[in-house]
Image 1 (tube, helix red, strand yellow):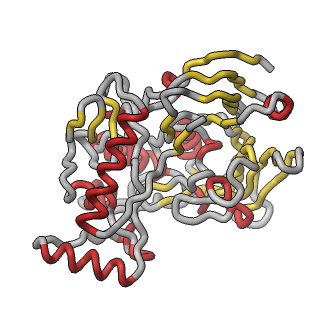
Image 2 (cartoon, helix red, strand yellow):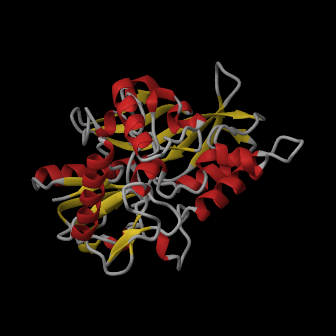
Length: 350
């Protein structure tokens, strides 16, 4: 285990924001993960597990304990013993988009609409990453984890992860207990791509034949790029944590109230197939209709020119700048629409 001190964290995040880590370890094996955890326990240090750094807001003071970056890599494929699917055992430190590209190249469906999402494989179960009509919960077979409570490596089945919209036990009831080492995905060979999302349907509406998985992946990446949700070197809209707010899920009464408020302004709440279930509404629509248009400028931070849900670092921004804009957006949306937006990124304070 290579232990480093006072390591800058901002360069390790897509936001390019945050102070240093007092101690830092990149663990490339299970044994190194266990050694790092033992070190943090022995020294009574707070422990933060870092993945690809794509969904984080790190405090300006950094992290006073140990940052553990999971660097376990490798992709292994094997047949499913029951279903007509293939299992992919993927190290938590693998690039997520790299794995998606690998899956598509082997003509296996299930994650093609999750192309272009930055970060690591180990981060995908934590927030049940989803986009364009797919969620990883639909393909995750099991996870290999280090259980800090029992100090042992365990396997968790899909049901044990408690997946829901952008949540799991890893960011709710069992936060900080498990460190994800490897994820097993069950994908379907030869299946057609998932084309539920309206933007994807428009990409192929004039085609007479079903697009391939590779064509679907390319289309998703183009859509993400057009919305500033693809990491492109040199693009200032790429300095973000991706979508900053979750699409709210409303009760029937809340939805009725929101609809009434919209009508009072001569507006209609947009409805898409991907949002139809559970009274889910568009957070981007709420943000844009609360005075935060694309390109909104708040000094060192602002809103992406391509997507209303992305708060961006315009250069030299601090975590305090990001929080101030986040809270202003939440206040205005709640005052106008009666809906409290919940942030997606993990806030690393310590």
